[in-house]
Amino acid sequence: MAVKVIGAGLAGCEAAWQLAKAGIPCELYEMKPKKYSPAHKYQGFAELVCSNSLKAERIGSAAGMLKEEMRRLGSLIMMCAEETKVSAGGALAVDRTAFSDAVTRNISSEPLITVVSEEVTSVPDGDCIIATGPLTSDALAESIKEICGDYLYFHDAAAPIVSYDSLDKDKVFFASRYGRGEADYINCAMNRDEYLSFYNELVNAESAPLKEFDKEHFGKDDFKVYEGCMPIEVLAKRGEDTMRFGPLKPVGITDPRTGKRPYAVVQLRAENSNGTLFNIVGFQTNLKFGEQKRVFSMIPGLENAEFMRYGVMHRNTFINSPKLLTQHFNMRERENLFFAGQITGVEGYIESASSGIIAGLNMARRLKGLSYVDLPQETMTGALSGYISDPSVERFQPMGCNMGILPELPERIRDKQQRYEAAAQRGLAALDKILETI
Image 1: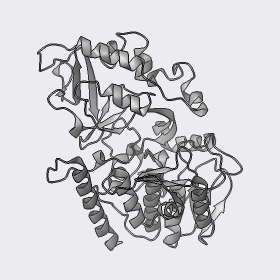
Image 2 (image 1 turned 180 degrees about the vertical axis):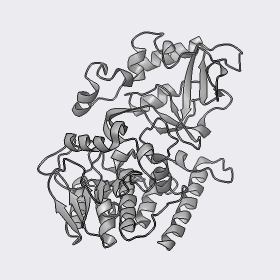
Image 3 (image 1 turned 90 degrees about the vertical axis):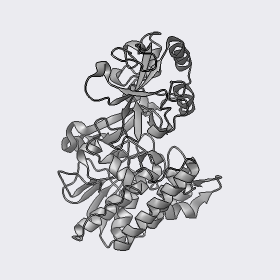
Image 4 (image 1 turned 90 degrees about the horizontal axis):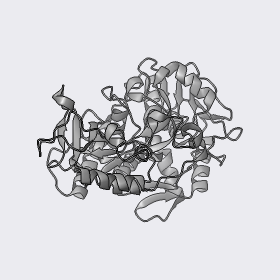
């Protein structure tokens, strides 16, 4: 019986391609052209909506490393991107229409892939890969919710995430309020002048415009629909001291540099079990990325912070993967149901495609009675898989590829570019060893 793959975006096409190349027949369901999501307009598969860029090509970058891993894993998306690329400096960019056409042509001409042009409104029984993206249709989302329960989210109100290595250790300090329990939070103490300067820049910073389908979920008037998801800049505009009675409250904290309670405190909480990534607590935001970098770098200790993910505020259907999925992208409670793409909490075009490769590869191996492929954490693909399936993560935020999710190198390399290059070469060597065995 054919595997059902739901959604012909980048992840779904990669999953179907992997199945077909492994000799496994599949049915690829796509609701276009009969029905379109609010963001899609072109009838072809793997439609790029927001940008034609697939990020940096340089191997010593997170995106370049991930793309090279995808090539070695037999990626359809990388093959079509090479055919349709356009000049873009150090990035891989494509002609969007030609790229979609190339993916559609390859998928449609593959004998083991049957394209079914219809909307799927409920999760099928049997072997299935769901790759329906951040704008999953309402009917299917409700069906997914029946399986996932409260672990399905329909909006992404996320705070920025920074790397631990980039923090100024002379200014930040670990502490918990009133010294209770473990010192789980990193604290950035502010005096009155620092707070007021930060406050004034924050309330005057430029926000990113919301798309119409985002407004439906977050409200058109200061995000009143979801009070708990209020952007930090909107909270700040309610009054000069509002943040000091909210996420920046200083009560129970003593600044070891002064021995006194600060005027305000920004707290950072570990984002992964390795403690290499920290999110800025309570700082969900709709500011433009450049404004986030400028304003949030005013926080003491974050002057040179490396932002691994900026805060976002948009509609995004995704599951709490750490509670539901294994690193192979299938459900812990239903082994023959896989998820792939942004619905799993990987964020970005190439990240979605890479998750489709792993889901398709592991579904094929499962059906052949072979062991699943465990990619090393030293690979970018393996690190992303590990991030979205780490059960210790309490407050899951979607994540794109970044060097902060990789394990530390055994040796200390001061130069960042050399460090990233060494990490990439280590990861690719680890991937090659796995490929020799499969």
